[in-house]
Image 1 (cartoon, rainbow, N blue to C red):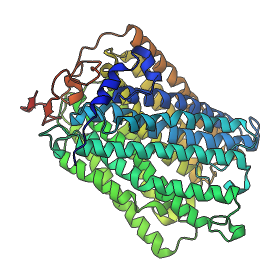
Image 2 (tube, helix red, strand yellow; image 1 turned 180 degrees about the vertical axis):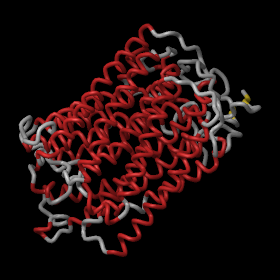
Image 3 (cartoon, rainbow, N blue to C red; image 1 turned 45 degrees about the vertical axis):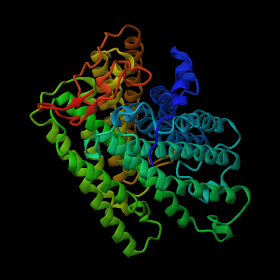
Image 4 (cartoon, one colour; image 1 turned 135 degrees about the vertical axis):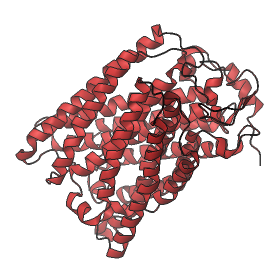
Length: 541
């Protein structure tokens, strides 16, 4: 079967609004949709970050004196849900995936442009509905995990809105995953082999497989949970004979792969950025491809390490401990490949490179604590403490969000034809890196000493360390200011970048910046060596 872009879609794209209006339209252009994902996601990031600031203000003192306990639970629930489902997943998958994948495979657009547009336009109403739930009587208070019986016994209206929002966002992810798989497999330029694709294509292929395989499980689980809430069925309600542990198994079958859905695209993006700014080929291309596929397979069989305190039998604990330890192997391979790529290179110290190196440092630390949490005795000791909060944020913020910023600095010239200010970029990185580590590194100590997560009040002995953590959160909030100023000033008065300011070899840089509607004026180039720095490369037009 061959998938082709309908000529009517190309005609429709040429007839759609121009200028800024196209970003508010039902566009079929993958580049416009990618920017829509990015801007929409960043707006929700600002909302989620505001909620995070409110949480850290509350935790600066041991008593619940900034907001009532039920409001704290609502803010905590919205923060986690927004940051995962409305910021990281849409941006690292939808934004960069939509913008880059057609360039990388030599296509004019995604395989299913209309489905692509639908996938994006499910997100704004879902997000607004989720945020609006805070203002209804009894917003969701059960955390982003929505564990029963808490999610069944708390006010129903907010929890049902939360479920509807997450279901729509899950549908968006599935539509996007199907589109990425079809585009990468079926729309490659003639002559372009799978093992010649840029690494981000492999990362998105693996991510999309995880999305398509695991997200329907979450959708079905939440539908059953809604039945328990509205129709008073007994799937997960223990009062009616339901089993809350079954919910945990179903939830984590999606939600642990969701970590890789957030992280694998970041692996691909950093693998595109490091070779360009170190002027060296990506080290170990083949091993990185197989390590991505290894993570996809193992990522589906490690979910129960979240449940070592849920009455898990010893044999199951042993299996999931071993499986989780094994997944550290392909992840470690990537770390050594990135370091080897940097080793001996002509490294440019710029904003994109700083955030990428910050990602490597943070992610390695988060990975080490992840291996520790896979060990049953240690996990039981720190389960539901701030050690887990610190580990998770080192993976998804210190890892993925750092790469989102790195990617914005790297591809901003591609999108706008302008260069961003390196001075403001370095200030942004410095404040973010110091603030992030100041915020979350002390939380490991809090968890080791027994401070529980998801509570507004705590033992006064933890106050000083919490104040250090809150000061780091303040720095992270302040770091957003130079970034926003940089974006606005660069778009208005930025220095012209030219078509390829980084002298990169990947296909998106072999056309004009910004690119034309159909990506290239003529035939798409055939790039057989996307990381051929220092090599004789073959590029045919």
